[in-house]
Amino acid sequence: MMRAAGLLMVLLLSAPTAGWATLAGMVPQGSGTARYLGLITVYRATLFAGADLEEANVLSPSISRCLKLQYEVSLKAEDFLLAADTVLARQHSADTLSRMRNDIERLHRSYTDVKAGDVYTMCYSASDQTTRLSLNGVEQVAVPSAEFASLYFGIWLGPEKPLDSRLRNDLLGGR
Image 1: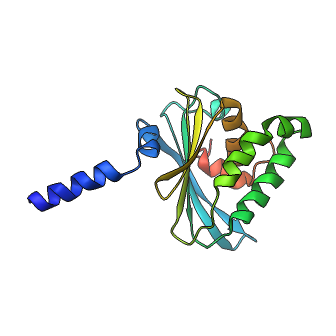
Image 2 (image 1 turned 180 degrees about the vertical axis):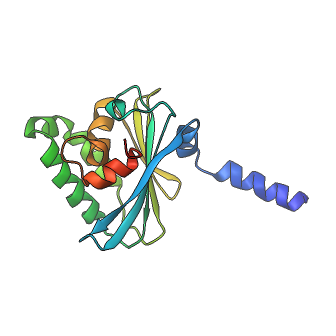
Image 3 (image 1 turned 45 degrees about the vertical axis):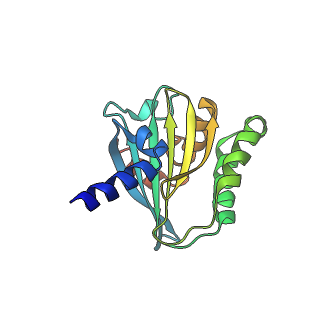
């Protein structure tokens, strides 16, 4: 019994808390899958936010949210960059992307290759207006900017030209 309690204490003290603290008070809003060529499941995604989330305010600076991506296949970091840059260019003007370039590159530098079973979690905290990216529970980077959070979460949740409209709808619980 003492050994189990000691092990539990070690796990609690060594666990990364950034993602856990941000998820506090959030509930799953919806989930879906991202597929390659409509056949191969690349990752399973779940959106977490407060119970009062509405589609119209999902990207608001006042709304804390987390997006959890659990990978079903191995991917190179370059794959993340290509997909993100493609969608961002589709959604935003060159001026907007130029203004946000430092924050985008800061997050992009933190991406690493993933294998099946790995989990990226991206959480935005409205209280400190910071986006944190974690891989398998270990924080990789923190970007303090509400504007960046809206722009980057927009890849999946933006009303205009998201990565996948079906996935967006699923994440928002069919709203």
